[in-house]
Amino acid sequence: MTLAFHQAQNGVLLIDEVENGLHHTALRKIWKNLFQISLHFNVQIFATTHSIECLNAARKLFSDSKEQESADQELENHLLFHRLNAKNGKISSTTYEARTFSFALEQGVEIR
Image (cartoon, rainbow, N blue to C red):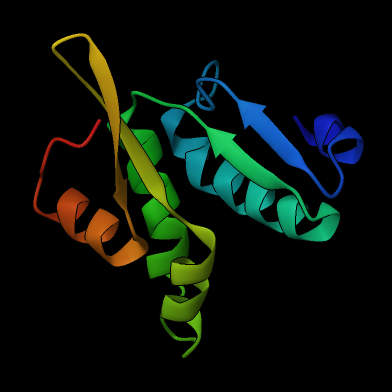
């Protein structure tokens, strides 16, 4: 994945099933590295997952750094979650901003 950022510089990188082949204990470090590399190369990441552990790891990356006053602002600016919904043959998207995303995960709301 890291090599793909160089080619996607100043653009977009699509990562399907971002957690595939990774142990759940490594996910927070993976998200941290992806975030740092995306800032370095100015790349917007679109990552898919069905893993609740992967979603929690992304949320924890930001919420664990609350000692920084700007942590909430960082989260607001850099993390959005889009859930695709299929109904009657039509697909729609629900977008969760960082705070709503975190709250939903903390409350155990099924958002996958």
